[in-house]
Figure 1 (cartoon, helix red, strand yellow):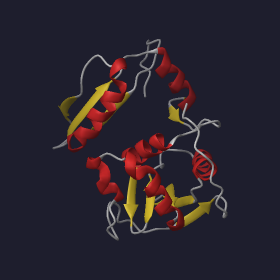
Figure 2 (cartoon, rainbow, N blue to C red):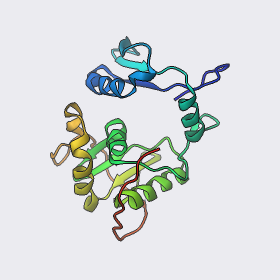
Figure 3 (cartoon, helix red, strand yellow):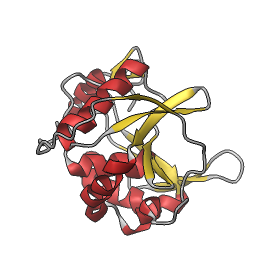
Length: 197
């Protein structure tokens, strides 16, 4: 999301590689009431070809922007709630798999916000996760004992062209070494996910 200088309202941009065209088109279908121009391909740096669209600048996006950005930095609102569709989209956007664990690439968030996300996964979905060191940053690792539950929850909602991220190969979409750091809770406490805001 971004709010341009001099603009009253914020907009939402969807930008992926052309290889994920079907995913961008699916997002467009969900948001087309707020979009004037259909997704288009655009040449990026090097050989990369992007496929993207932007919404109009509108008050609903400004409200979301003000909740999720402070001084142009992404933050996690303390009252954030997600449903399984939001969880599936989060994984399709920023997820990967290594061996028997799933990862959510949250490196852009401050440690406190990552802890909020760990608590959210546990309290809203009964998923146990910890922070995994990725070079000098941290990301979320869904614990092995919760990975099957995670896959079962989001699997039916993941688009066919994005199923490779849920691959059952021992090593698939992420080959990095694992280092465990911080976890939240040890006992499952399943909670029915509430509707997302």
